[in-house]
Image 1 (cartoon, rainbow, N blue to C red):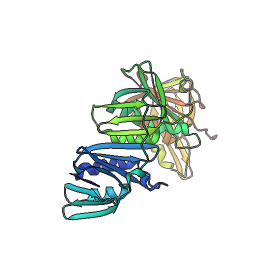
Image 2: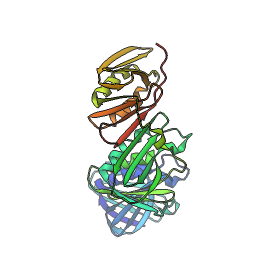
Image 3: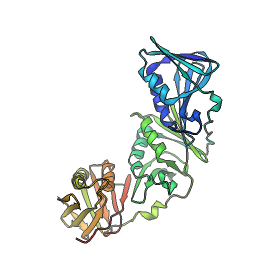
Image 4: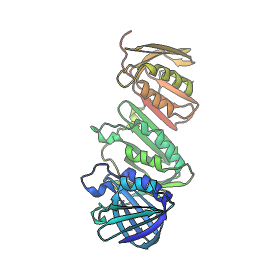
Length: 368
């Protein structure tokens, strides 16, 4: 038995966020639900799909303590559409859950909480704190390069690494690599691989504020505390690419360019390509200009940007989407572009410093 009342808007937002960790189709019926626990005038709501769990607490007036599992989708839809701001919820001994708000009332079938799998305990090996806004930016600027190919599971996540007071996130999918680093006030040395899916959930839960996010790192799991939410995620095991040996230290061709101008030119070339029609954007780089060309079955496009280039002339081809992803995530007005011939990756960095490094692997060009 359980009985409580709470604010509809708070409950709706909590259930909506937690539901993102719920399996849509699970072998265990309880995993398609959210676990609700009511105690000490607090509601604890959990969603868990055996890989990632999201848990939150909110205030409620609890008349009788108890717990129940209800269908995440159905419960979420009901709470969202209730007519009044106060919601009364109770369960009986058969786990039937009664939801009442204003004149609207529902009875839905609940599941005994004993059938809900326990969320993993994170045995803390290391922990650190980081500003929420900074973590959000670092993930956003790298998660685009996480692989979705399950053949190499290690690359479906990003390497998080702390060494010598530098926190670094590295993502790679075989076609491009993104590295983002910041100085942090933290003495630990650690590295672990966080699934891309978990990072996308972190992005959704961080609201724009300057509060800290705390990370607790265990052997196989990580727990992040973001305001009144906790995310518990498994880590990906395996050996991550040695990215330090992959990034070339020198360049035979180099130029500084306004990020938006280059992105707009690549974007114009992209109009002739789509998922079905793939063709590289051909970049011909000479001392004073960059010519872009694209030719597909639907037509041809050409463009030119003035540039001041140091080093060798080079002709190189790129997948327009991979190049655009890197340019859009640079987030600086100007970038430094470095090349080593037509077969080595293009390197995109800020004009000063190393806060980000993007590598884009070239596509082979057919002879004109």
